Image (cartoon, rainbow, N blue to C red; front, side, top):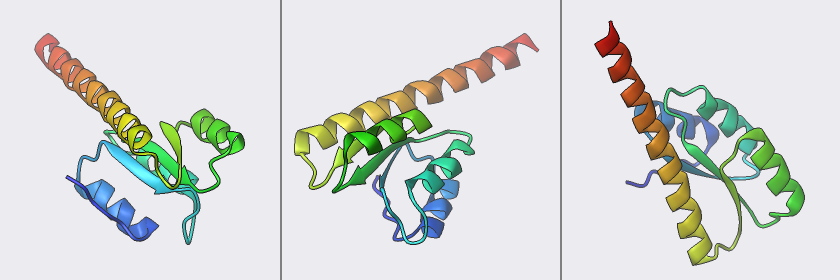
Length: 112
C-alpha cells in the first residue's frame, strides 16, 4: 500500500495511524527537513526505514543521512533499479526487525 503526504504534519499523522515499513522523504521540506522526519519515526514502536531523496544527493548528504540513521539516499530523478533495490532492502530490514520484536514478545510472554 502506498501513502502520500504533502507536508510534515500529514506524514506524522499517517505514521501514527499505519505500520509503515519504508518512508521516502525529500531532503528539504517546507517547513522542516528529513531530519525532522527521522526524529519522528525513531520514536515510533515499529521504526520504518527512511530513504532520503534529493536532486543534490552528494557524498555529504549520503554520509550525514547514514550516520544519523537513514536507510539510504537516492538521487532524483530516480533510477528504477536503484529505487526498487533500496525500497526492497529497506522493507526487508523493517520486516526482519518487526518479526524479531514479535518473537521477543512471545518469548517474554511464555517465560512469565
